[in-house]
Length: 356
Image (cartoon, rainbow, N blue to C red; front, side):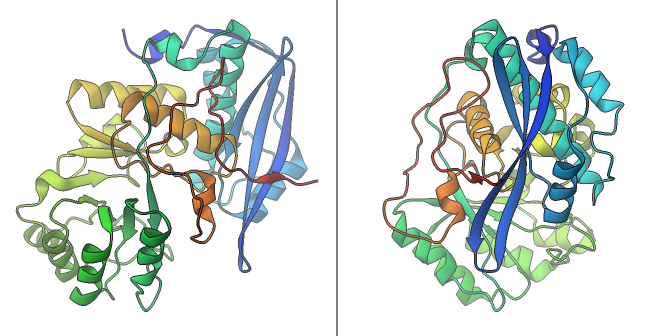
């Protein structure tokens, strides 16, 4: 049986829908704002988190109010309805936000359905949760400063790192990282054309990264004739993230995936998420969890999924504590399993605060 088949016919009664603002002051310059979607029914509540990055978009959604989802549904019938509706009267800032918002609603619906059924997700799927290995994810800034990573290595000894590479890296920068930290994944960010984070496709950078980090996943290269040559011999370490919205996207990649960064909010629907997990299992692919700077229940949900499907991988699912600057007393990897008694929720280690 497919994973989604085990969930699709679960009944869920929705009697009310509300939205809640979450905010975390990450630095003096940056405040992360997300939206908790709360579905209520039969004395229970299910939670999901809309991780739209644009604060103005999040606040417009909150001001407009939630969609009317009241009624008796199954997981699948509600998902189908959600796919056909505008979840906010205001158009989102980007197409990705439509999927982020859909995931917030569908994950809340799954949480509510499981709570109404009186069981946790792991038991419903028949998969025991395991301790979750996690890494931190960061860039080095411009000019690149390895100290950003080395400070985390000092504050959380043994922590793995997913690091964003840019063309300004020198070999000295790469070697400082390799000598001072455990680099599990290097994100080449080759699939953000036109975005501020787009570093282009630099064959020299790709070749250097492949050489200096021989044990790391090389995520999201932009593949052309030049970068294929630069990555020669490293095909077995290529992983994909940003272009993957469903199984078809994965199968269409120019280099066969050896691993996938699974981000539920990018996939949008429960059906696409669990179809991807089925595909990973059937084709014996590696997988690791990816975060979208969640600060509320969404962070726990990606930790929950990691505990079921890829607990020992370099999951970019660190507790919310790691969104703030390095300091002592941080949680250590792996995280002990922490599913709630029912539903699709994980006991949080750090969270944003509701505002207003």
